[in-house]
Image (cartoon, rainbow, N blue to C red):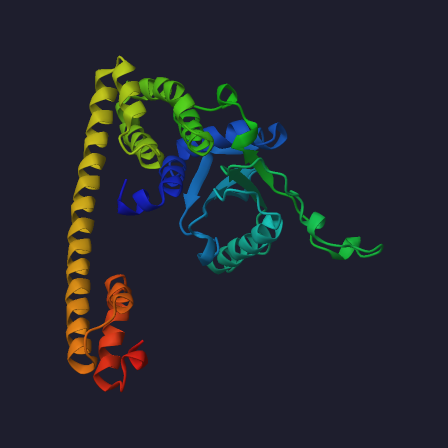
Length: 328
């Protein structure tokens, strides 16, 4: 994972896993309704570039768009990965906006097209509370009698990881590993670590799966609330897979080293900041003592607890003030 992945680990795991068409196919084949998945030509599935989510929501959602053939006609599969802590009651409205953006982009790329392809929207929800919001746009509209035919209508598919037990996750080993990692990170992952490492042990036997193996291992470490990674290391030692142990230990060491480096950097920055603050406090006291006489204990205490910015403001004020009261 990159620096961005450390900051947005959920998005990065989702994208790194499902940007590969074989993983996306394994996911959709298990979570789309049977009547749809049986008609889709899965060997035609292709990932499309770009994203359609709101800029303001990029920290809590991400998306992937695919083209696929259905009955020899083009269709679009749109997967929105939602990892807000609670369901959004306005999700159908948001999806409608994204779908309109998808269609507009499709028209620009295919100017001779006479009809738009259908878009099948699916929300993969990782949040901490089970989904309770309406799946249909009509549920958000107060429709009086006679208006029904004139209102937009669609509903989205939903995969709510809160409603799926860990042993009920479907798909290839990679798909189940990724979904379990996402699910466990919201529910307190320590109880699921043994199962996760069992799946990771299966991946360790496949060289082609090493990139996603490393991504999941780093994801586990990054979202773990225990800074010492004690439980992670215990599970690593329990797995009888030398390749997995090697990869897991390397990633843990990298993150520990990175944490120490950041800690030292923060310490240096804090030290410099404290030095500036102490120097400003000494300067202010010197000016006040010279202009207004010895300061009182209450004023000295106020100065000792002030920020650097506040001290600089007081220093400026002390140069022109007629009394110590005017300074503060």
